[in-house]
Image 1: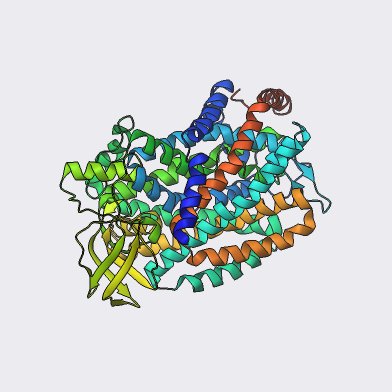
Image 2: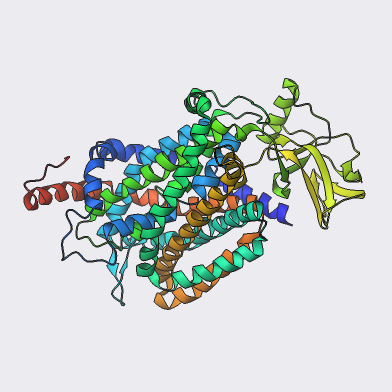
Length: 559
């Protein structure tokens, strides 16, 4: 049943989020505005640092949060599993070259964030309770006069609150806590769901108060641990850095247990994970920034320029260097196999054979299918007796043991099209590549801290992911407010917390596939709206600088 669901979600994802045209739409929009606005991510960067410090604030500015609180709330929504688990997944599938495309996405995304936040802040509204409400749905309604598109975006935002902010966050936390502290996922989910409910009941002011303290602290903890890994493996720093750029236009070659990746794979996964990490173009951060105290939309747009830089160019690059310099990304590790990552082949494949590796690579990239096994898998004392190969996490698994209730299993196991037809409590364990949060956890043990390094990842992931879930609850309730009014928010929060709890013990691969779909459902309407209003953006920016020069004649402007 779970495999059928994952197959369906993967098919939907292939039509939108993982389709060949989606990265081009995302990067193309960022490139267009970068050229159209004359590289604002470079020209305005220094000025944005002054704005976020409150240097140009006025007492008459309306809003619920400060520039810094809006920035940390938006960052808490983006700095999450994408920085720890998402980077590891991108490297696992696309190789080191995927990191280059993550960085390219962030560089162009700085402009996209600037544009979407400026427009959303400009067309925000004050709700009946006096709080501010904004986001792409408001400029779609108030400027574009497309209420139908605004409704689509708002519905997609509600779905993405689960697919981006709730489900993958707690799933990564729970799996990491289980691997590190041996805490059952259901207990982790229960405790954190209670904490989540307590925080989000207080609305944006309580959320902002929590995130402005949480974000700097969690970043410091993570940086210390990451730098310890990188400098512990100092001899690999330069080769690792070179590998990010060396294979950009050729694809990453097979290495260790890694089967290799084409340019398209590295590009798609790098751009996709880059978007998941910094959310530039998705339209989520503008919802947080719409609450900021500012009477000039452009000033809040300038603050947003900093987000992809901090989130992806700094944090994701550090994570990538941790994975590459430690060497764990292409090594096989002891792990429990997940059904969605498992394929039982009909034939035997040799990892030392270039011909066999090529066959498997073509199979894994859906270019040329190989025969999968169907029938009875004979198992004696946990060992598989059939002559075949088991693929897990895109690698040939080794030392495979079949267990039931923690003990070696003896008997027959029914396999259908390479998958367990009825697991019935059976688990397969062995050595294979790993991905997502477990891979980053292993990397952090290759440092001065040794095995204690895993605790840094656990704590970092706990703080990162939990803060993301907090921020996305706000995005979801603003979307519900737009769709059904403020009375619907309570029901949304209840469902949000329940979903958060249930995802703590769901299949990781399915969660990540779902997140890719929901991201695309938000991004496409938002990008359309940004391009539609490109002249409005340009005029708004020009007016801002004219007014600023009049109010602050002693200040040097970048325009």
